[in-house]
Length: 435
Ligand SMILES: Cc1ncc(COP(=O)(O)O)c(C=O)c1O
Ligand SMILES: N[C@@H](CCCC[NH3+])C(=O)O
Image (cartoon, rainbow, N blue to C red):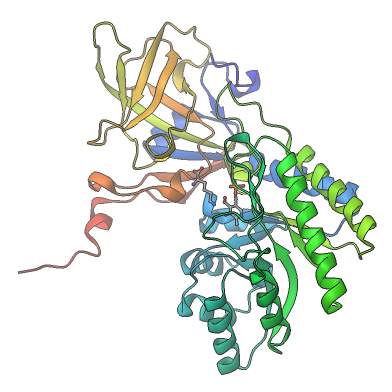
């Protein structure tokens, strides 16, 4: 049994349960590979974030970074939780439109938004465009003029804080493809262009320092930087910045090695930092927005697979192969990301061996887990990889012409298919004859 599993997630049959449903039943009913979400766990994360803001009596938005997992059903859950979403493409925006998501609660990110994407944002009157570069300001300005419309904008700045690999480095001028640099005066030039455009309303400043972060320091530095910039712009331009958006990146637990701090602690530290700095700089307290993606959906997701072939290599760890792999979870191959798994049909049995969990794709690098202790498995057993809810399905591909898996939402003992499994017919739907 895996220590990460709470005892109440294993039923009397010794099977893993997800949202109150036996994982082996889900595998049987919907087939594998299958991505199953415990919806209560998604809701709980929203509520944990919200609670900290409420307790501190701060105006806020929890803007779900939908790149982590963007589907109609997911956006409907976010709407129920009164969340905001951040989209980074016309496709994510289209999904939100199809979900009936409130358009005024959408931010549009991206370092190369196309004219068509910006037109879509303007036509649907989304909440805010987070502008990233001068080309975008020009495009947006033309579109607003043509359509005789207005748009709220935030300016994304490059924070100059490197939060990767748990190291905080104040570089002053980070080399990043995103956002406006402060030191060279780009951010201020962007602000001037926006302030002089009668069709744009400047509402805030955004920054994002990275992803899967385990310490609060980077966020505190970023928050201070945003307040200082807002204060400078208040002095120079008499501008009251309504929103400081500190982005996402709150780390989660993938394996026992990970020891993330609670989402509440991140948010509390951010709020306290902003409050303190705002007091020092004599500003009006702005609203604080965060953009969590991974921490909202990551822990809630489980990838269910059926075990097939096995290869024993003398002196090395055996390969136990499942019916999915890098097509439904590219993260191990792409980032050497680590995961943990359990045998869903024998979740309380003792581990008997250590194996490698291999995928079925035609790549040696398609190993989902390099080292996993498990009971001795048989073909037909159900394997569950834990915490796969973020950047799994959203980064899925049809490599080797494998159909992408189905996705189910499970809550209160009920499951609902929210994304159908792709069929072979779907795979050739866009293909055209050549002869
Ligand atoms: C601008 C922005 N906001 C939010 C996020 C979400 O990050 P995470 O999923 O790590 O919370 C990202 C991705 O790193 C991002 O680029
Ligand atoms: N896709 C990445 C995170 C990217 C964050 C996007 N800015 C991951 O799986 O960890």
